[in-house]
Image 1 (cartoon, one colour):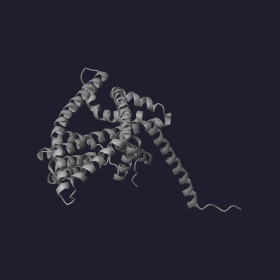
Image 2 (spheres, one colour; image 1 turned 135 degrees about the vertical axis):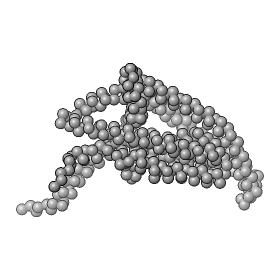
Image 3 (cartoon, one colour; image 1 turned 45 degrees about the vertical axis):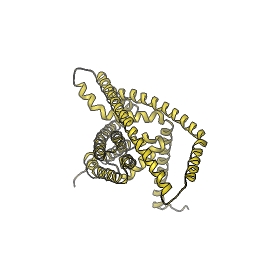
Image 4 (spheres, one colour; image 1 turned 90 degrees about the vertical axis):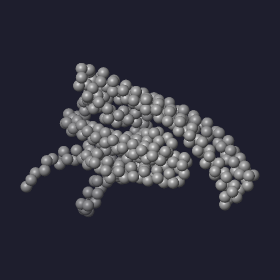
Length: 353
């Protein structure tokens, strides 16, 4: 006579194999995304940009032009705007580096003078030997430099191909996004199509809300850093603010890391006092973002636990580098909204007793 299995053990075993299946499915999905990252990442970026530009296409379509023409106008207008902004930033970087290089040279000369006359008391010959060793270390790494240049060339090729893929996908997302989604819904069984369609609408609403709110937060972060940098006369203020704007799309860590670049530039250009003031400005902007902008603009509909944000950023970095970190959090926010929607739908309306 067999011994009956305790109910607790049976329940644990049932949940254990389900958990193993879920983990394996997520692992396979992660490997598939990593393998196809050169295709998946541009499509994800195009989807995020489409969520931001879709209202502009809808407004342009209210006139007498068709959806395709409206999408083309918005995409071309965005390209022209980005091209003009990059041109302006390039000019600012060229001018800023010319001034910053003089300050760096002067700082290095001060360091050399301090090494000779300071507590280290190095002689001219000892200093020359150290410089010669440094030059030898750089010369011995020529092979690694060539390999790095080759790797950068391959990466640039991927970036160019990804740019055109983003552009191509963006146009069709804006032009016929509803038709593409309807085709995807028809791939599911009839009994599941309604829930899939509603989940997609919830995910899209969450994604658009997240992207628009993040753009506002990023703009405020960049403007705050720009104002502080201009007041302190830190070089490269405009390029640094653009870097902060892009970094703000990675919540929690992005704007802080990019803002730290402003502190380094201030340290090199004006010394520790100005660097500390710049650091205070970065901290002030971060506090404004964390305690005012993020809770007010994002709200509960697209909020994600900070631990989930960190894990999403780490997974994005492992799969696709910086771009993966940029797209990971909004996609996780959309997934979170879909899960909440499905749970609420399965529980049904509450009945008062």
